[in-house]
Image 1: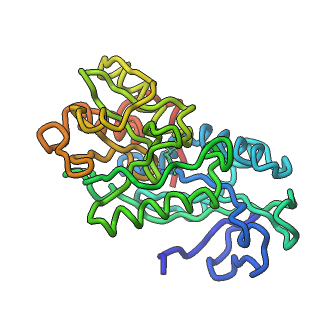
Image 2 (image 1 turned 90 degrees about the vertical axis):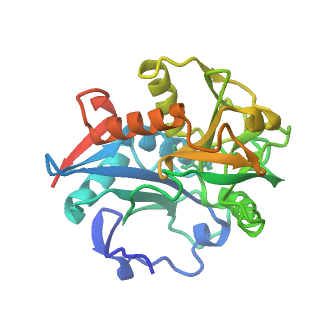
Amino acid sequence: MMNVKMVYLNGDVVPYEQASVPLLNTSFRYGAMVFEGIRAYWDDKTKALNLFRLDEHAVRLLESIKLMRFEAAYTQEQISQAVVDYLKVLAPTQDVHLRQMVFLDSDEFYYARGPLQMAVAAVPMGRRRGFEKGIHCNISSWRRISDQSVPPRIKCAGNYQNSRLAHIESIESGYDYPLILNDRGKVSEGAGSAVMLVRHGALVTPPVTADLLESITRQTLIELARDRLGLRVEEREVDRTELLLAEEVFLCGTAEEVVPVVSVDRVTIGDGRPGSVTCGLQEELLAAARGDSERYSEWRTRVPN
Ligand code: PMP
């Protein structure tokens, strides 16, 4: 069981055991729950937490609510404030990953649109497995869900059945993590992360029209690559074979941050070790998130302990 003691539920911070959802809840039955994963970085020097890109997460949650046709029950400010209020009570002194969820308070049919509930829970989270040495990926035999049927742009629980199938297949086949092609056969993303590669010195990543979640880390790294590493960035369709020929491949996401991919379908990427762009972006991302300098302060929401 996860080490979560207190959670936020509809304005209150309550013991985890008390925050239950009825068995016949519509969101639970049909996966109709939208959510965000947000990181807060502990700064030991100033004894504060820095929420990274809180505004962008709130905006994306609102977009998921809109596309799910949930009723418009929350403002952007209420969504952000819930996370800040919760963190103030919880007062963790380490890096945490916050799970913010909006779901139906209903036991009606799957087309219910409200009323809604909002919950937030934090779990401690440092760097992910493979952050330093890299991971081995496969190209999944599953195709990514499509904007024409189950839009991956919506960050909704039901969408993760696609990720689940791909991830289990990957692990059972002896890999760490799947990369998934869309139904046009182009690279879309990982099971729960965006994918980027370095080809002929440029940073390349599939466009937001490639059947993927519009990743906030992806957008962050595009800016960091241009501004801090002086790289050319190409948002364009990516072929499967380009992954194999790339100088570097890596995953990115809020939880992953930047995780090097050292092989794809057992083909070694570059020299089989995390590359210089990947490592450079790891450093730049952590520096921006932790607030090592004044740079990118607009990306951080400080919550003093
Ligand atoms: N794609 C999927 C399917 C994801 O679940 C995530 C994690 N939220 C990402 C990409 C990365 O998005 P972000 O950088 O906003 O965390």
